[in-house]
Amino acid sequence: QSRTLLAIGSILHFAHDNDVVWGSGVNGKIAAEAHRFSTLDVRAVRGPLTQAFLQERGIDVPSVFGDPALLTPTLFPDRFVVNVQHRYVVVPNLHDLQIVQQLNLANVVSPLAAWNRCIADILKGELVIASSLHGLILAEAYGLPARYLRLSDEENLFKYNDYVMGTGRGEIEAAHSVEEALEMGGMPPPQFDAGRLMKAFPYDLWDGLVR
Image 1 (cartoon, helix red, strand yellow):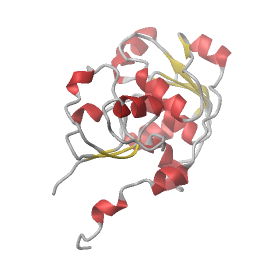
Image 2 (cartoon, rainbow, N blue to C red):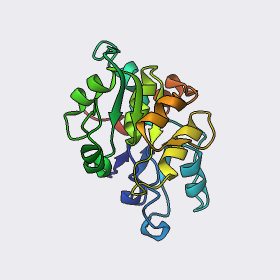
Image 3 (cartoon, rainbow, N blue to C red):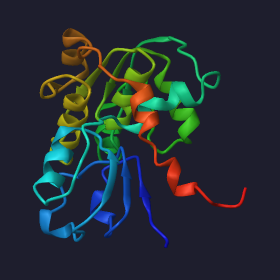
């Protein structure tokens, strides 16, 4: 039987019955009734808000939290290194890219660049200021302080709160300008157990396959 594995991103509205979830989350912009599944095989989710959403639908969800992008240093131990060259970098969400360009901000990491280039550029900032959720996540994965920059109301706060609450913190506190972000500094550091999320990976889906 073919099943889909949903891992990184706010993609649970794409899930169908019996699909497997490992670390993905709910997109707060998508209506609840657009989630058409009634049963899922959940191994981990991004955070407790996604857990509660699924539990309200009668789905069993373990308390294993974390976005799999947090595992980048674990999975690619020699691929990327912190290489601070700027006081800060700005990582816009795709929907905020035009705003960032109009503001003519410095040290912008384009979300349109290749994934490996994005990570390398994120790791050049002493402070990572991001409206991109994965900009925040990748910074924190490598031990860099990060601050959420809210430039527009395009993105629902659900995914940001889901991530920070899933890593041992309260609701996210946003800066509304680079200057305010520099004044606020980084968020409290995440509490995350890479081994626990790795252990929850559905390795069993590949049992019996010819290697």
